[in-house]
Image 1: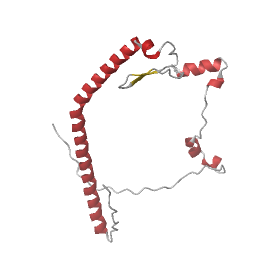
Image 2: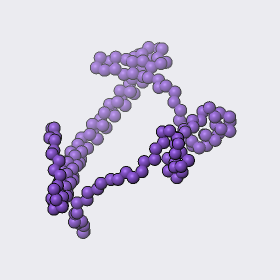
Image 3: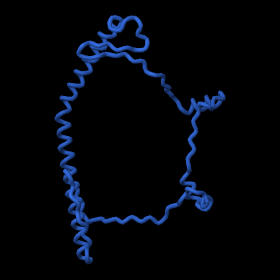
Image 4: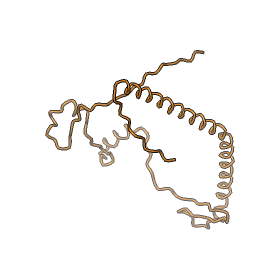
Length: 172
C-alpha cells in the first residue's frame, strides 16, 4: 500500500496553531492505538503458532539426530576410506556432508591473555585501536581549533511539539 503525499497546512493564527496541536495529539494517539492492536494481533498469532512450531522443531531435531547417527555409523560405506577433508554423499532424496571447519581462536580471560602476551614479548598478537577522544576535544576545544577535520557543532536546536494528554492509572 502506497502512502499518498500529505499537504502541509501552515496555521495562520494562534488559535489555528492550537487546533493543529490538538489534531497532532489525536493522530499520535490513533497511531499508538493502531500499533498496539497490531502488536496484540502479532502476539496472538505467535502464541497460537508456538506449540506447533515447538513440536515441529522437536521432530526435526529428532530426525536430524537419527540421520546423523546412521550416517556416522556408515560413513566409510557412504564416503569410502579417504574422507579426511569432508565429503558429500548423495542419498537420492538429499545429501549429507561432513565439512572440516577452518581453525578458529577462542579466548577466555581476555585481560589475563593480553598481559601474558605482552609479558612474553608477543605484542604482535595484540591489536590496538586508536580513535579520537571526543569528550576530551569538547573539554579543550581551543587546543584542536586548527586541526583540519575537527568541527565542534554548537547551537543545534530541536523543535518539540508536545500535545497535552491526561494521564490515567489502572488501580487493582
